[in-house]
Image (tube, rainbow over all chains, first blue to last red; front, side, top):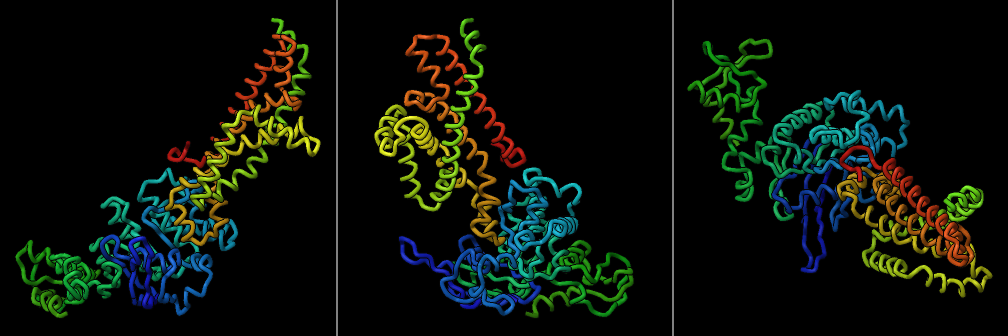
Length: 316
Length: 218
C-alpha cells in the first residue's frame, strides 16, 4: 500500500513560490493500479517523482507498506521501486540483457541468475529471449524498446511500479496491444502501480482508481466507474468528456447486470465476461432490448436487458 | 635520393628519437587524461566553473609554444630543470588539457537527460551512473579529444627540440642550423608520418569504444 499524506512540492522561482503539488492525500491499496491523470503541468509527474525521491517533497509524507520513504536512503529506496519513463531511457551502451540486469546487478545478483531473470521477463512480455537478449537498444522498434523498459523495471521483482506515461511514445495500434499485455501481466503479478497519463481512455482502461489533478491539486480520487458516473466538479466533468457514459460501458461486465434467463430466442449472444460496450453495440445493431448471456461453454446462463443496463448506469 | 640514403643509414637513430618523442607525448597526454577527464566531468555540475576553466584552457591554447617554453625555462631552472625533458612534458601537457577537458565536458553534458533520469530512478549512485552509463557513452567524444591532443602534442614536442628535449624535432633543428636538407626532410617526414599513424590508431580506438548500433555511432 502506498499512502501520500498532505504531499506538497513548492518551487522557488524568480516569480515567487509556485506550488507544483499542493496538499495531495491519497491511498493506493496493495496490488492496485492507480492512474494519475490530468493536463500537462498539473503536478502528476512531480507527484510520481516524489515517490521515488527523484524530487524531494517540500512537506508531507509518503509511506510504502507502512514505511516512511523519507527515512530511507533514496538510492536504496529506488532499487525497490520499478521505474518506467516515456522516453524509455534504455542505456544504448548495454544490450537488452544488460539493461534488464541493471538493478539485479546493483543488488549483487550473480550473472547466471540475472540472465535467467532477463529471459523470463522477455518471454513474459512476448519477446523471444533468443532473438532479443543480445540486441542493442538501437536495434529495437519503439514498442519492443518499451517492453524492454517494462522488463527492466520489473527485473528485481519490486512490489511497487512507477510508470510515467509509459506508452505515450508508442503508436496507437501498438499502444492498445502493449496495454492489453500489461493488464494481463498485472493480473498475475499484482504490483502496486502508479501510472501517469493524460489520456482518459487509457486511464479508464488501466486503472483500479484514478486521481485527477489540476494545477497541483487533487480534484477527484475514485474508481473509473464512479469518476465517470459522478464527476466531483465541472473540471472533472469536462476532462472526462461528454461521452463519459460510453466510456463507463468498458468497465462494467455483463455478469454485473445479468438477470435470469428469459428464454430469448436465436440471434446474437454475449459472454458473461464481455463488457457493456459489446452489449450496447448489439442492442443498436439488432434493434433488440434483451440479449441472452452465455458462459465459456456456450450455455445460456442469463439475460441482459436495456432496463438492467439503464439501472446500472443510473444507480450511482 | 640522398635523403633516402640518410634515412636508411640512420634507422637506429630515427627509432631512438621517435621513442624520445613518443615518451614526451605519451607522458604529457597521459597526465592530461588523468587530470582533464575528471576536470571535464566536475565542471558539468557548475556552469560558472565550466566557463572559467574552458576560458583558461583556450588562453593556454593561444600561447605560442616557443613563448610558453620561454616562460617555463626561468621557472623550472629554479629546480634545475630549465631545459630538457621536464619543460617539454609540462608544456605539452598544458596544450593537451583543453581538447580533453572540453570534449569530456561537452560529451557528458550532451547525454540524454532521460538516461540520467532512468539511471537515477533505478537506484544508481552518482559514481555508478558515471562509470556504467555516462563515461561509456561519452568515451568516443573523449577519445576524439585525446586524438586532437596527441596531434597537437606531436607538433609542440617537435619545437621542444630547441630546448634540448630531444625527439624528432632534433633532425629539423639540426637540419636548419647545418643547412642539411637530408636531416630536415627526414625529421619532417618522420613527424608527419608519426602524426598520421597516431591519429589513425586513435580513430580506430574511438570507433571500437563507440556504443553499438548505428544510432549512436559518431
